[in-house]
Image: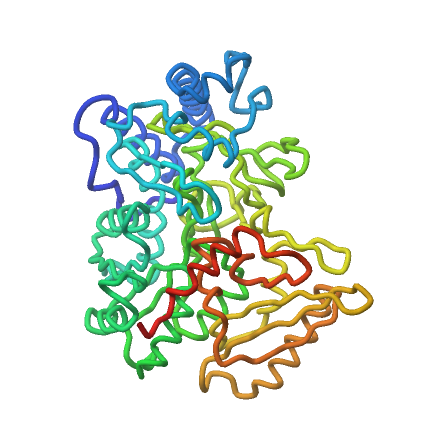
Length: 483
């Protein structure tokens, strides 16, 4: 049995009413889950009870689900077989908006929205139940990693994410407080902060952990170079917690080389679905299995493979909050497997492969975003970013150009690196590849977390500009680090 040295119970809890009753029940289960004392029978009972509560609630109190589930026999549905229920899609959420809610909006404590860059922004309110259930898993993750790196010393944290109708600042600020850590919200794209001020605060406050997207971490490194900072000499950063967009092991390795810090792909989730998985000290991602019934489905056919395997992650929430979702297709391709990890974190292991929409056909084969990024960045260090351009030659054959930006003085032989990237990428993807070393990439590269990896990283000249790329192009005009 693994016993934690501290109990990172959230400091904030609902104080009265049904939300407080749920929190008390949930945290008792949560502690047993993390202490490995939760029996299979107890976990199964929680799943059955909460699934029934969610289905009863949404079918009677959500206008959208009342229609969607009208013909479903809810009494026959179990956590082991949800196939009698229809899927919920992102298109449904955009079309139905507040009609998806199954509790009054006034019962929410926070109101958030999706970014709206890939379609209509959808409402994502959260009540006390949802906050406790989601944040508890992140708190466990951070507490374990901090003990591993800092012992009993609570590190100082810089949170570099949007703080308007986005959950980044509230959620991670609460988690930082739960772990006893000072946190500074220094979103570098804010007109109040900016990159120069963010860097100054990082230095003056001796921040030891920075939480941001991989793209922001790279742009911050470029900004540090521009303003005359040395990343290792001038800053105290020991850990980079990256989230919000894909970060393959190859990209993480590059970030570690650039910053001289350990990089954790710290959590996986979304505004709509909350925090689905969290990182452990071994840099593996564990599902928050007390919060969801997990299915992996075939992206093309919708056939369910059950709770493990490779395919599109589909979630049914077990928290009966303001906006529980039923068989929600996340649009993310994942690989889920039983855990063989020796860390403190329970839950199945999940590896994020990429979005279903980010799959790209090259040379007659289909590749995921992760496969392309891995092909480009494996073995690369000292890079400030990359972009790939896809074209066709006169014979209609696909060809690829990799644009690679390098930080000054971090690569001993840039031309040798370019040759290695060219050979490795061509071998992995099976198409001719050229490599261009760039002094500065298109600012669209920095928009990945707000639009999509594909819009930020891929220029596909075989097709017309799509909606996501148009949005990213407009956003990129205001994302410099010198203004």
